[in-house]
Length: 257
Image (cartoon, rainbow, N blue to C red; front, top):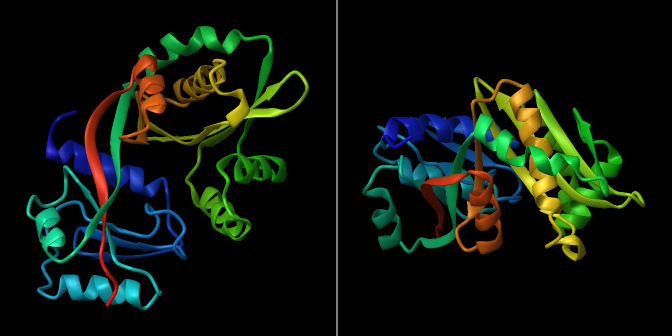
């Protein structure tokens, strides 16, 4: 995958897998808002050509100002080339630089399959998160209590088929969590987290193995994920599993006026 059209289609598909509470189209772009929880759900998906409306920037700022938020732009390889510099000139601050990584599903499943056979952990796969999965997710991610309703709504809005994986130790402790969903031959992973005091023991590979098997069973030909560019441990994990960085993106946070 190395063309702007490929990136554009992938990014739009990936955005559909993280549905905001509300959205509004502006030409090819999508304005997303969800009470400020997560950049993905509270930013302009600025992929494709500029909007035709001459006052597009003012309209975007007004949309977010009406919701008490700064305007935030998702900037990537499939954004207009001039956009990032234009927003920098307007005082926009770069934050959360990420890679979009992709792996062939069959290769991923083959590489990770041996890690499914660990006898010191077991995996639960749920079609929707139960209360225990949500409790563990909020705890392991360190999310504030007031964010729970957003994440419950987000996970409910995610299109099916989807899987919520919980990796359990012999004593019943949750050691890792992850989410996968698939459609149209693609799959995406998100919410991958290992309990802090259990990191470095191979549980992440075991979690990924179960996610990969589910993706293969659900017709995925490729698997996509997003990771922070400065998260060296996660990058090493994903690259060792077969993922490669295919494109970059970041956010530009505009100053509120």
